[in-house]
Image 1 (cartoon, rainbow, N blue to C red):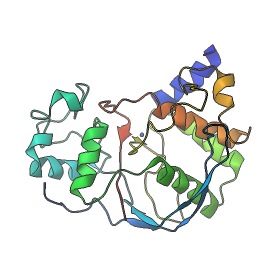
Image 2: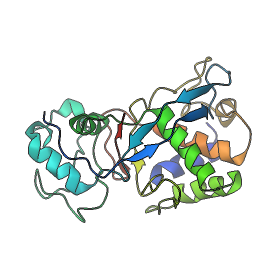
Image 3: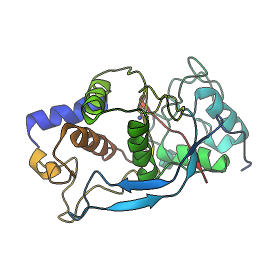
Image 4: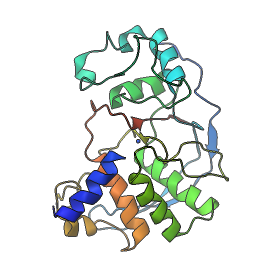
Length: 246
C-alpha cells in the first residue's frame, strides 16, 4: 500500500440470560432498496431491506453497567480471555462501575461482548447492509449532498473527539459520531472476487471495489477499510455499538 493511502487509512483509525431494559426507545427505519457502494465480484448489487428498529443512540456506560450487573460472566474480572484482547472495559473503577460520564457511549468492548449485550435486549448487532442502508437513508432524508457527506466524513476521521452528524429526519443520536460501531458481519467484505484485501492492497486495488469514482464513495470505502482492521476480540477507546430489533 502506498504511503498516502496508508495515511488515509490510519487517519481513520485514529479518530466506532434475562432480557433487560432497552438502552433507548428504538427508531423505526422504513423499508427500501439499498445499492451496495462497494462491489463484490465486480457486480453491482441492489437489495431490498426490510423495516427494522435501531437504538436511537449508542449503548452508554450506564446501560452496560446494568448488563454486567445482571450477567456476572461479562464482568471485567470474569470474562474469558478468549473474548477480548486484554483491554475489555479498561479504565472502569470496578466490575460494575464505569469511568466518566454514565451517559457517554460505552467503549473498550469486543464484538463478542457487544453481541451478548444485544442478545440480552432481544436484539442483534446491526448487519452491514442495515447500517450502510441507514447511512444512505439519513443522507437522503437530511438533504446531504455527496460533496457535503464526503467532507463531513473526512473531517470526522481527522478529529480525535468528533461530533456526531446532525440528524433532523430520523432522530438518531451519535450515528457516525463520537465512536465507531460494531456490526454483526463487519468482516463480511474483506475481499472481492480476486481476493483483494481492503487493508492489504494498493490504493489502485481498493479503488476497483467502489461503485463510482467520486468523493462520497471513497469516503464510504474508507469506512469499510477501517472495519477490516478489527478482530472479534478487539477493544478500543473509540469503538462502541448499538442494537437493532425486528
